[in-house]
Length: 329
Image 1: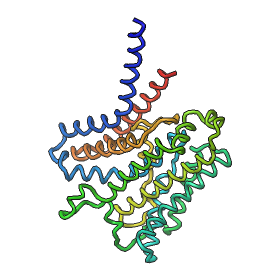
Image 2: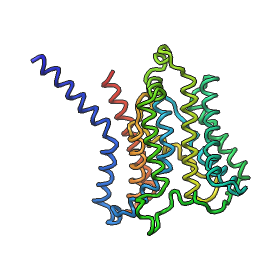
Image 3: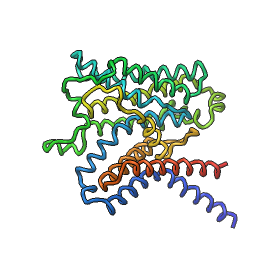
Image 4: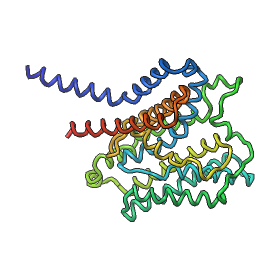
């Protein structure tokens, strides 16, 4: 009898662990099948699936960096502004006849500079991440507008414009645009970083209990600086994809997009308390949000309905996270 009592809790724990791990993918499946059943026939078409993949890349790319920050127990509200300044830097460099690859690198480096600033203020001055990144949200947005002289910057057409463009008839063998495959590749690399490197273990350790991590010899400041720089670097890469979509540098783009990025991580199982989160979950969260918007749009529902549904899912995800933590205490 004693052995049976021990087996039951273990079975329940394993079941809950399995559910937590695959819940985001289950959510994607449920939302997709829901719109397949009640939506138009075109929703399940290959072309629409390609469109959903393309529309998920920008939020998904920024969510890779945000996942690390949220696991760390922090937050970054400046991601949308970093995306904007990245598009402006890329367009300005292309306009100056800089090769596209170096223009894209310039956009990413601009993002990393913002992350370096966030990390410095948070670690050296001991400021709260929410307040710091709220401030840099405005500073970076203002810098983007100043750099662009408060107008869009036109840029010559290059291969950057094709990163998330719809595939032509002769490109169907690719299944998805290059930007989508770039997101998949970087997602794999971030997953490896989080689960198979010392930095990844330190990120989880700090998010779970910063004091314990410090006592174990983890260099807290160095890890935080690295994570915030990586977060903004991925936001800069999202800016590259945003530029591909717009084909111009726009200092007013991505206003409020940081909320979508944070929401994607939370919907995907990331805990705002720190210590929990996954790359697969964050990408699933980004896809769920895109599915909802695409499904509602194709059914002719107004934007306010989409916002209510998305907001309700976010609140539900956070509520379930809090209930799960209470049961564990």
